[in-house]
Length: 135
Image (cartoon, rainbow, N blue to C red; front, side, top):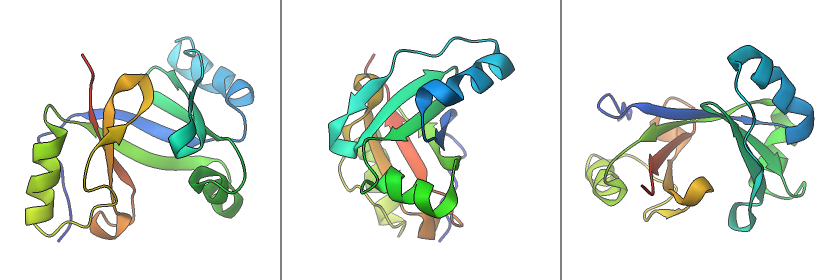
């Protein structure tokens, strides 16, 4: 079964980059927005910053998920994130529909939000993140 989150709006798209500082100016120019301060997510092995609705992911080392992604694919789209008001209920719904989940429970993400990932095998090859805002 293919996962299609039609009722959840897109929250952001994430780009894997070698350096937030080196990449931010391109996205600032395109969006006319300023890059947020970088945040370290030790548990995910990344530094993250946002330029509008574009999340820049910089690996903390080459042996992290994003580090391996960059080695294999270079700088490119990493995932698409959909916003949900109840991430636990959304994960339960998807699991009941047979969607393969990477995260069966939400975990802390950037900006204090809760996040969970859906396996690309259930999404036509695209990594999908679900995001529940902290506010």
